[in-house]
Length: 460
Image 1 (tube, helix red, strand yellow):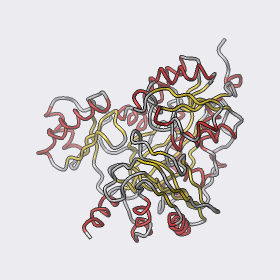
Image 2 (tube, helix red, strand yellow):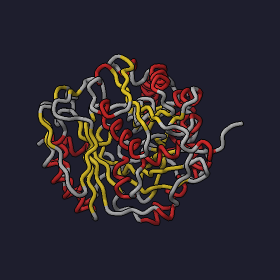
Image 3 (cartoon, one colour):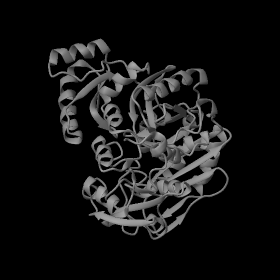
Image 4 (cartoon, one colour):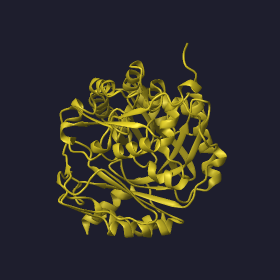
């Protein structure tokens, strides 16, 4: 007979962490605090990764290129069997939102620490996600919940009904790719053709959809956590508007200047949407916010890079909650238990040139990190660590928490001043300058602000 939820609770005691870098360290810490053993994996480039020494098992699964290691599903599943792992945590990036991988993990008799494959498939396709959100009463960006047809005349009619400017998006897109703004009708078909080809190459599908392009929105996120017992709560909201080329640079919680009576119905609708699709684990609803209105754009069915700001303001260990949900445990809090205390910022510290933003590989010759009340650093690097050219340039996350937004900004300025990384180029000087910006300090920014700020900075 199939096991009940009560029987499945605690059904694994060893977790394979199918990721690298700072998130591998973060997951390992959560597992240890829950009394779970860990299996770390690496590519040949990451053989000297420090988290390998603190894991119960450490296995090299392939060459340096991600396609042959961290994206190699067969190698990861084999490593889990060899090490006796009962569950796999995908972290973020790589295979974290791959429905086929989640399905393969479950078919191998292991637990995927994340939502079910069906939930990932529904929310991973932007068109089906929008349809599900509209059914749950979550506000969406104006535009149809169907894929664009091939017929040029029909596409023109849809654009006119929405109203220019519009934005074309790949249905299976993400990471800022597969999107193109169309300001007027005479460039519509060229934009469609270019985006279809980009989507085919990047995501294996030519499917596109069209929405209204909002000109001055903020990027607001709502964090949710759900169990298999019919419980879902939202843990507050974040502002992730400070972006460069659609990539987040600084995040904060809560989003400034949004009244509780405006955000609360949206958060409750997100929790209800999770219940309707049988969602399990953690997830993030992403919205554009303009003129007091929220518009759903997508859901990330995984742990977010910026989860620490919500942890510090909500008091909830999101990674532990995610693992416990995968074990079959019910949530140990209700919506009434969730509070938001103080304000938090996160800076992504990247190994990149602060002017050109080109990646910088090499050896870290000196490292000094800040510490003290309200300061947290999530990282995997140390003096002598070799930053690889094969992966994302994120090397650390600097997070601060304080009673007010102004105090948190002051704390971040001081923490950045005490952060030193030598031997490679980093974006620390860029972040220091950003936290001195008046409009940012006043909360007067939108998703386009950072790009404009950079243009002005280069011109002076």
